[in-house]
Length: 263
Image 1 (cartoon, one colour):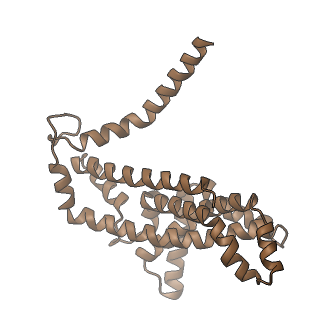
Image 2 (tube, rainbow, N blue to C red; image 1 turned 180 degrees about the vertical axis):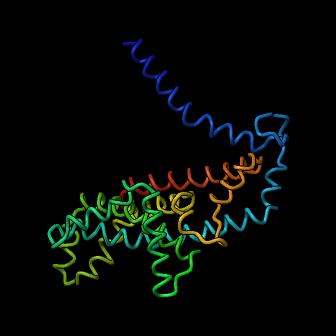
Image 3 (tube, rainbow, N blue to C red; image 1 turned 90 degrees about the horizontal axis):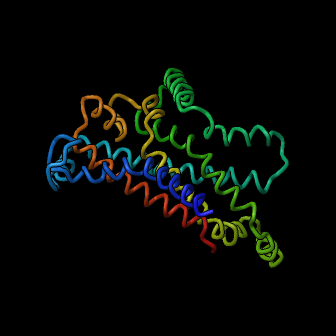
């Protein structure tokens, strides 16, 4: 039994090291003095200062942040509606098709989604004169991709929801809308918030889908990083990766806490 426990612990440690040791090295080397990203020559903050003086990188980061905020909010609203409909309306015409369409972005390759969204925007631009590929098209694509994650979280929260509270409110004369606004929504708010954070994180680091729907003047942070890395890894990329990992980790931790939170 002791041998099995040691073996299991060793395999677990190896798995975590395989996943997180490269990330830890990137964080450590973001404080490296040398321009060579694989040679440690001493502690320094000069690459952090260089990153915050890089206007092109900061502009790309600001664009990605705005897109993530807009797409996460849109995905939270639409995902809430989709998850609520799937749980509270178990039977309606086309439910199976609707349910499949909701979860399709989770299993569909991003390349396929990117091509389809590109064809949609090109066709709408020819027929209706817009929208031009840029901020709006990226936000729409990210919202479409993220709805599924919000809907799944909301659906799971509503599945074990105590409907006695809603029934009591309606027995006291509350309308369905008042009951939803004052009883249901506050109780599922942690799930909606968790879905929003997941959608925000997914939008912030998406590259494949964004490349299909972005215009020539709309370069997000992942696109800027990808174009920079092709010419050689700059130490500023380590700094940027450290910031992104920190933001994503905080968002995921908060998302998990909101999912488990009992109101």
